[in-house]
Length: 311
Image (cartoon, rainbow, N blue to C red):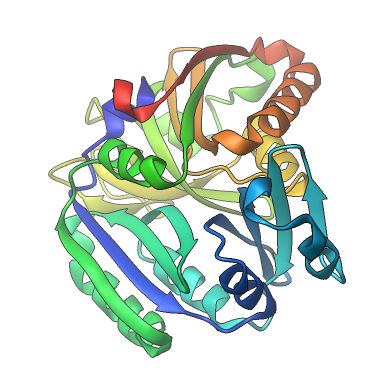
């Protein structure tokens, strides 16, 4: 499993909580709903996707929720997309993600608070503090719930899953020759074809990720890459991948929350994984099989579906 390989490479974790008064927040709070959230940055602004159990809401409340909002319903889940343009959280999210090693694992809403979970490398400690001080600390009822040694992303998702059941899904494929440019792709040119990475965010055609250089192939600092830790061979840079972009765009279009996305290249074998709320698994697999049909030459297959208690 990719998640086991990258589990504790980022050695620090932070959990912060805060309140933001918005119509969707007020609705969730009034109805005592626990929701999981994903933030997506776009060129013109950004949006948030909330997923929560349909049984948590009185059916008579649904018209109130759906009025003027982008809401999708399934037998198990309510999926809401909310525009974040002008919302101070969007700028805080972007500021935090500008720290090279920061990987946001989850945003959970419960009992009037948003809980933001993220990991980072100890070399970026001062940058993380500065990013929080400039944005997050100004939110109502802001508090740092934990900052310290990371017990690993598996432990984080295991704990979150106890409150909001999650599944780990890993997919294998084969990179077609047309998608592997060994001449102009700086990642392959410098890091070869044996590395792992963790997705940070997607902005239009640019996807940023934290890279782990297993074989110490990068001998010097390059302009195209941010060096996070030379000792631990951790870097951050942008990449392009039509499959990953399509997949993220489609889960976003369908208002499905996916958490994290570790990826691995070993020769021509490309693997990616993600964490999915159990309540939206049918919607997730509908997107996955759409991607399978769209990218036939990648020969995608489901390698693993598991719960975190088994890891």
